[in-house]
Image (tube, rainbow, N blue to C red; front, side):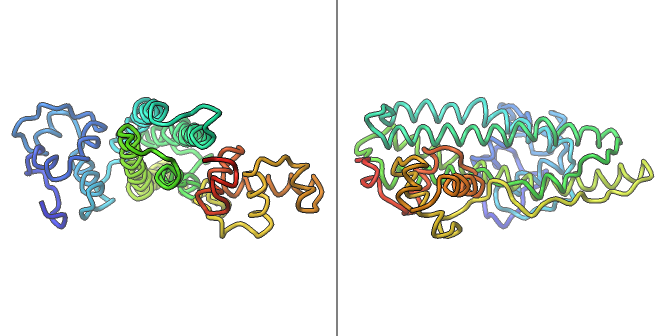
Length: 320
């Protein structure tokens, strides 16, 4: 089916899946089970209590077709997003880790394999923090808005201004495995790489749906709730910092790149200070700033960053 043609309520759901198999996951997150036979999208949504306009907007958005954010109902989309969080945290990310352990040598004797697994674990920790914050703060806030309750303590704009996509580091992991890990003839490694690529794409679309569909829908709820309560839905101003944004080596100063190189070489702060003719306090300050910029707080993560961004090669840190 031509991607220029929008999905409508009359199209058979099985034809939607045939046109874009990845929409199976979207369907599942809306709570639509298999076994829908030859029923149309409209019929299936009605049978399962799914708000039709929201479902159509979401599948058109996810498949690269035209869409209109005005058609989204915030409560229905929130349920979809919550189910997506459960899928990522409880199923796909643990599954990828299990396959990684089987595909690479994670022993301390294979330093690159060990670093890859550590980097992945740190990445999953960031994803959990990202999604758990939304589960704990954003979604309860929206639930109150849906009840007409308006609070001055939070605005969706505050979330949006700090909302960063969580797929770039997964792309970095994929790139370093492809470029540096010797997996000749390793079908399991190729399989887990495919899973990582699929998950990266899925996470990117998930974050985009939050930005482009969910946030506008919540802003409309805020305006309605404020009007009902006799208030004004004033946006909460926040800092210009975008937490977790993808940072490249070129975004670091020359001194920061030197320190990243030293960290990746395994030097302590004292050794870095001696090597660069700096005080230990200055090195500590630089490392703190580097961690804040990269949103990476471990030696393993910084080492992977250094390799991915060409600051040094695996041979330079003794990785063969």
